[in-house]
Image 1 (tube, helix red, strand yellow):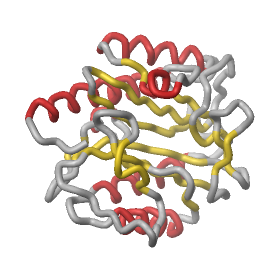
Image 2 (cartoon, helix red, strand yellow; image 1 turned 90 degrees about the vertical axis):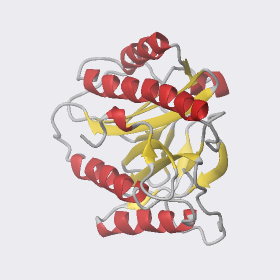
Image 3 (cartoon, one colour; image 1 turned 180 degrees about the vertical axis):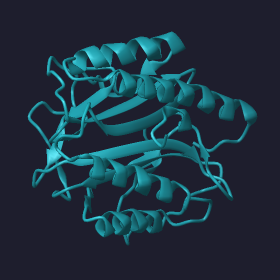
Image 4 (cartoon, one colour; image 1 turned 30 degrees about the vertical axis):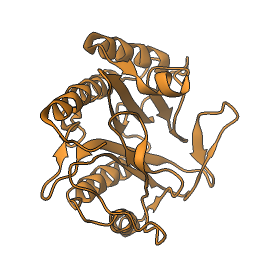
Length: 253
């Protein structure tokens, strides 16, 4: 969507506060010994307290309130009775609707101590997201930001997932621009537009460049295995520094 009046910005700020706070609290709550379903239900209660509705459930009938992926699961993991263990790499993606506005954010982190050395991957994803977002303003080519993300990933010895992308958001979960890729897509000549709302996501991986969907119809894993870290913010594009609507999620703290 494009922000054209104050009420729209206020609506986006409110739903973004809901998803950011939920993601932050879920990230803090996650610990070894709990199930991903317990973690999901904790997040569902927080969203409900805001009056917000789960976006994946509302839009796609997803079997959970948030997406929780663990270790070799890259994204869209279904909350279950799987028990979190020390050193697990976990990704939580929280998106929701509130009063007709939609927002999306995500966080990958290590549960407990980093006994499997995932932190380097997590830090790379966070840092690259920060750099990418602060290079976005009206008129910048989407493909140039994708090029920046892939270049920064390669510098650190990682790859990007080419069939997962960021997207426009606002009045629904996925809007134009439908594909904000993590690589230089030479066929995409689209530019970021001032006042538009977009969800920017990094998909930084150890060994795979593409993700496949498992037989459950939702969970995605690397075509060549490995691990992936994802971080995501919903932002408003401006002529200068972007407005990071989900900054309260604490991903960069």
